[in-house]
Structure formats: structure tokens, C-alpha cells
Image 1 (cartoon, rainbow, N blue to C red):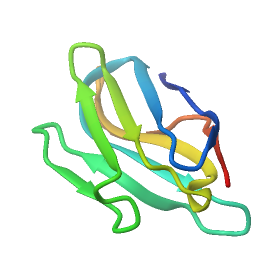
Image 2 (tube, rainbow, N blue to C red):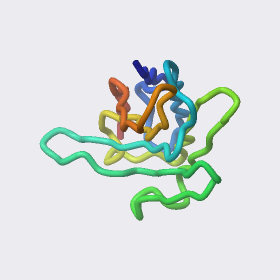
Image 3 (tube, one colour):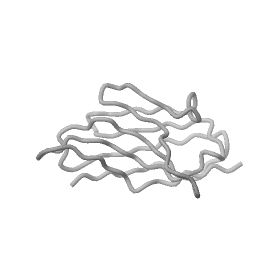
Image 4 (cartoon, rainbow, N blue to C red):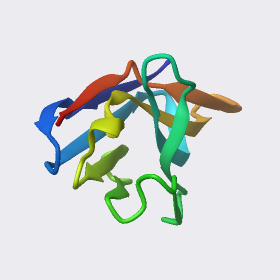
Length: 120
């Protein structure tokens, strides 16, 4: 079993900042790519940012320059620092990771989601 526990969402005014965290636990041998996705009401889930095991990052155009993804491999945790937040950033944010399982094989896992609401 692999668990992803997210934290850090909440209500913030436009222009404010939030830092999301996602801790991975369970029968994991190693964690490959990690990422953050979001889903606004009535919209499809979209990639916000991703980071490889080597630290290479990728961002959605809508958040470039405002968000920074990072990871702490010792803590099996990925972070998303979001600055200059806009009302259009309002969504449920989901953590995702691809792992090599301790027993055998690989798996792709999702967190339960954390709500981010940006007021204008």
C-alpha cells in the first residue's frame, strides 16, 4: 500500500501565497516523478507542475514564474510553493507520484486532494 497525504490548502486573497505539501508513505522502494495537478469545477484535471527524481521540473504555462515545485527525497515529500495567486487558481489540487514498489513493479498513485480557494 502506498499513501499520499496532502496538506497546505486553504483560502487566500488574490496576490497571496500558499505552500502545498505531499508526503508519500508505504511500501515504496523509490519515487520517480512527482507532480501536482488541479481540477476546477466543471473542468478537466490538468498538470500544474512536475519534478523528476533528478530534479528536472516542468510547469504549466499558466503558473510559470509564480509556482515552484520541489522535493525532499529524504522525506519522500513534494512541495508546491504558489505565489501571486489568482482567482483562476482556485481548484482542488492533487498530488501524484510514480513509484517503484518495494515488492515488485511500479505504480502511479494519487492523493485525496486539497482545496485551494483564491478570493478576489
